[in-house]
Length: 217
Image (cartoon, rainbow, N blue to C red; front, side, top):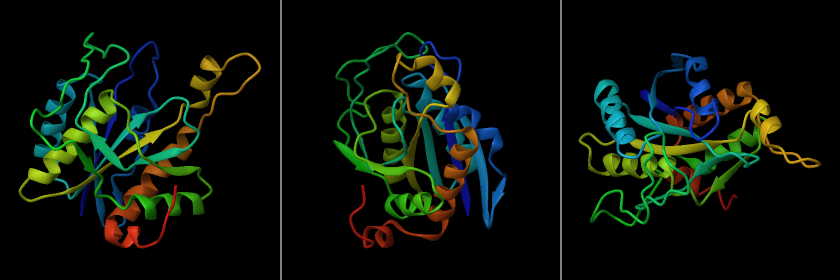
């Protein structure tokens, strides 16, 4: 089994992105699963070009995209990617697409094909806050998530894919916290552990099995 994990460069005014910082800390192998990592630019269009390069180079059986969702308090396994770019802020090249299809004429949405419910349960058993999320936003994270799933649906051979949003690191939370209130954060060690758990579950469990485990949020 071969797994690919992608992470983004820092974006906006923040010099840190835990999705990037986690990549070099992942093991090269997890059980019988080989793990490759790839850095994606936080840029519409170019991020998918980099993803294509990663898929060609690694030929994975499963792919997990990782991105930052500042303000969230839990590891968020995304359920659905939508065919829409609608950027609230500029990407790292200054682009800001509004109401634009990622793949013109493509499906309105794709669902993750990794076992997100089983992964959330496994994360919680390890004491990590985790949820199934029904929105990956409309910035570059969703752009890559949709592009990934479009490629997974049309690739030969096919592969399974999904996306994990992670919280701020404590240093970021300290920077963005409002006076008198806290901003959620998670240590880098726990983020890395979370990625490892998702990969381990994905390598041994199908989404059909996970769905039969019942409702989870």
